[in-house]
Length: 378
Image 1: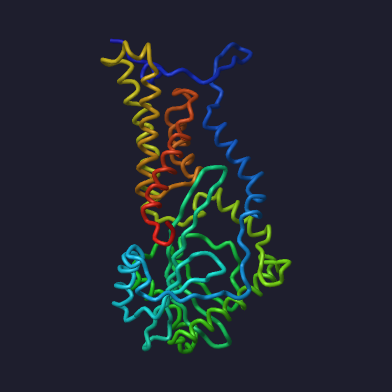
Image 2: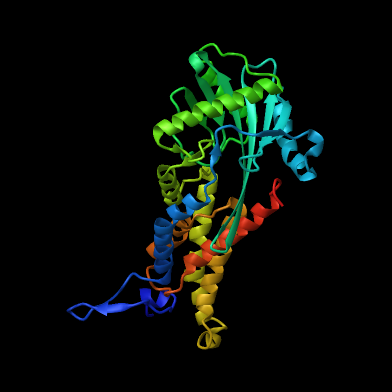
């Protein structure tokens, strides 16, 4: 009984390119259209992003124009969005003090909570962004909670669960605990209290609207002056606002290429790694060979059903990652779909840009989910 060779077990997809060595041996050249697409998009980001960011960056006002939003003026969608957050904070004896936004800087929703028996204050920030880059429209909604304690000599301790890494330097008077995957606000508060207990006697938090707004403006002024000293801000020609420096844009571009520029949980990282590797390999090593040797063998000679089957597996992997984990980084998609398949299956499954298909599926699936969660913009 003849044993099948490795080439017979692998799917009978053509090799991308071959060349002959001096002895006549034929070897595969590691190239496909995924590499071309990824290289092109990488160069485009590196060469074009800074100019686009300079053009689209909004000036930061030196003084915010604050508008208070009464509770009855919140939309039904906004009230539903805030309800679970308010419930968690109410269990910690924090009640909403007021909600506001800055008329001269975006449409972010800011909400302050107070607990008269606790020196730590609580702030909620809801951020929504819409972008249009060369006709490709994108949206983003995120929120973060921050507990803040005031300490002697003007120092502050902040504990927050913001998902994105900051592009700015932290002032020496401000200690920040980053807890990006902590959605349980009681756990976030425990981490804050444990650190605050080691840092000295706290000062009382402001408990009324005028005092909170006065602190909001003064902290913005202090923080902005530090960013000017660091070279992250520069004073705009009008003298009433700040402009972001190229140093900040360069950090943003760098974070774009970091797989973990947006902090994700270990569980999501493992899940996307598993989906991104297993589904494409199933298509390459199982589904495509079965279609080629099974009942569709005759059709395989007419239509590229093996390539379509592999593409469908990549497409499904991208949709799952986009819907379940909001994955929109091309670098991460390449890591979890491109590297495992080529390490295991080699270069035997063709030139087609399968990982690019996975990225596009993930991006548009995630964008569809994000649009459903918008509460500030129509």
